[in-house]
Amino acid sequence: MHVRNVKYLGYHHFREAAHLSCTGDLDLYEIVKAIYDTCPDTYIRPDHGRMIWDEQGRPGYGLYDRALGAAYINGLWEAIDKDRKAAK
Image 1 (cartoon, rainbow, N blue to C red):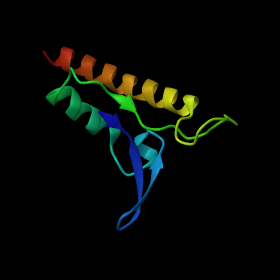
Image 2: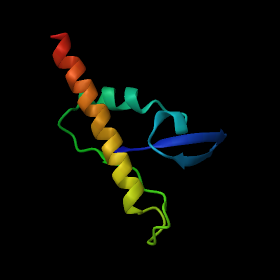
Image 3: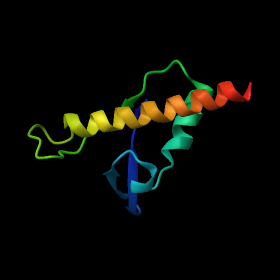
Image 4: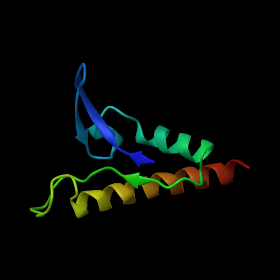
C-alpha cells in the first residue's frame, strides 16, 4: 500500500499533504485501521516526501519527510494493534 494524504483543491485538483490527518482531507487513522482489519500482512510505505529542512535531492523523494510518514504510520498501526488486543 502506498499511503498518503491529500488536500482537496477542487474537481481534479489536489496537492499532496503531510501524513497527519489534520494536514489534508483524509483520515489516516481510518485508512490504516481498514488496512489492519482487511489485509494486515500487506506492505505499507509512506508517500513521496516533501523536501523539508533544506534537504537536497530529487523532488518527491526526500528522506526526512518519508521517515516522518513511516514513523506516523507505524504509530497508528501500534495504537490500532494495542486497541484490538485490549478488546479481546
